[in-house]
Image 1 (cartoon, rainbow, N blue to C red):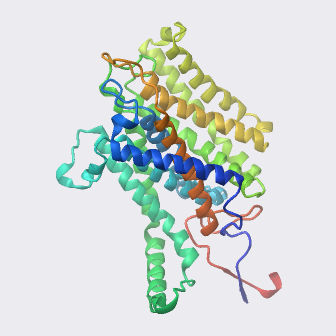
Image 2 (tube, rainbow, N blue to C red):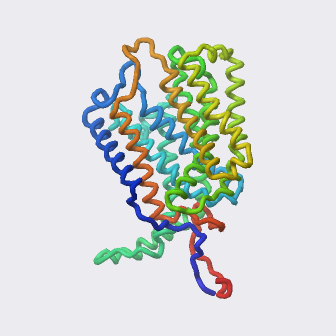
Length: 423
């Protein structure tokens, strides 16, 4: 018997980190970091166009609300594979998990810029400061816990990368065995209890995804009737679930193109079959909601709100739902990427509509439009996220090469033992 590490197992990707594209992203990220530091040092008034009338702007609608929704691929994929038992999709889970972990990390970073007193963000950790009647508290504490859960779920990948390979230089070599032993202990612990963290992640995601839709319910007279609805929490949850698989498809296809890997079109086409059902459910609830509230008349006014609602619904829900119902679209990498992009754009537009377009303060001195620095910080955060993703998939075994099943997506990538004759 011979121990081998099959090529089909997840492994770090070999590629140059700096390319023409990553150099552009690095420049954008540096500009974003500069703007971010300027905001932290000089405050919101100096860095943004926010005001008493518009206390929330681009950062809350895109960096936070949209970022949380687009990170839903982690919990939807985990639920599909680890709870529903669809193991054929397990090779997609590690990239989805990494995307979710980085997504939530950058959501928190973006939130710090949006908070007036960002240095108090740790307060929800203290039981003495808990406020059970606050929606923001529920969102904050769930995001904190879920982000911790995501890092715990990523630990088996870190253990797989370094266990048996700890080789500290010089005098630090005396720590090699203790560190390797600690990795082994952590591996055994996670092997027993990881399923509990997976379940916790799904529950926590459902809680804060829906609660984000509750935030604007406290302002019924400041919200346009097309978006103000008592079932806003349900709509936010359904839209996050619907965008989960398109986000996995989008990330997988872009990563394949960036690293010059074969696109996993067949597997992604199979995953895409769930999306028309989820989008159909979301669309049905929206139609029923408009009907029960008698809000259809607001669509025919020709206002900017009615136009934005139609673009969000038709372009981000109806069109991709129809496209992904077609077999010839699903079997095409371009078709999958285009349809997935429409779903993602639709969810981002929905969050912008809810937090910006639909919000009509009664005493605003002037309309809100984001400052150049706000835009720079948002673009910089997205660019930095892509760069960190590229770096981590080059360090850790996240991506599985095509045409072969791998080990458990949460771990178990140790070398297999196979007969000599089968090598």
